[in-house]
Length: 278
Ligand code: C2E
Ligand code: CA
Ligand code: CA
Ligand code: CA
Image (tube, rainbow, N blue to C red):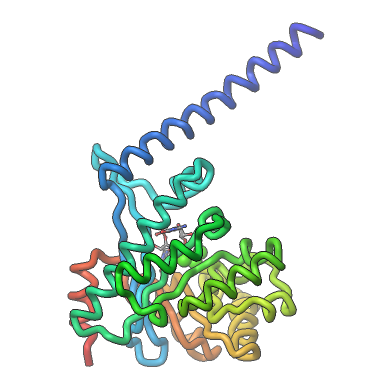
């Protein structure tokens, strides 16, 4: 029995070891890649669904490694969070996105908004609000054209702390969107206590919309909820005209997705905006 136990233990620790080693390796690569400037942002336009007119963009983080491979944020953000690197990376993302907003405004896009994803690890950091204030000051970005996206799972945790922190964030003038809405279990009363401005319907519910008759029920519910609470609603991951049509008929005001544009480089965004002008 003893040798079996040991054998089992050996097997267990070896496979764990591989996984941890891989994670540690990626963490080092990310840290040095970040320092070497391998991270950059792509900007995905957000549009008014009724007119297709762009009103803003979401900043999305990208990593091109030294050897030219692209690693998706879904893979490296958990590692950045786990290692605490997300605090520095997140600040860099915010400053980059705010600087881009300032450039866009200087280029004549004065009503344009910028949405920035914020990790819960970053948001929980005791200096988050100070960091946000300084980033706004240093870049000269107008707070009322800046939106932070926090995930619904985060919105569920530690209600009292979150309510207070969101209130502090709101005092800086930036607005708040709840990302991936519908994937968590926010209660209505909880949602009312949070000073959020916008609900972002998760892509999975947009994808389901053209499936069964019941497919649109969650998207529909979120749109209704937004209307009842006086919150803005945006659908993410809109890929085709059919989805856009159904969302429009459900009264969804805003959208984002490949149908309108993929995430773009700053230059491509400017060009894309130029082509949309009416
Ligand atoms: P998210 O915030 O839900 O971002 C939307 C994701 O859907 C993006 O993937 C975007 O490229 C993709 N997408 C947009 N439109 C479509 C569409 O029509 N069809 C499909 N199939 N996909 C679409 P991406 O850029 O790989 O980002 C994945 C996730 O990584 C994000 O999900 C977000 O949670 C996280 N993330 C990205 N950038 C940052 C960042 O700067 N900070 C933090 N903390 N998280 C980030
Ligand atoms: Ca987002
Ligand atoms: Ca999202
Ligand atoms: Ca999502």
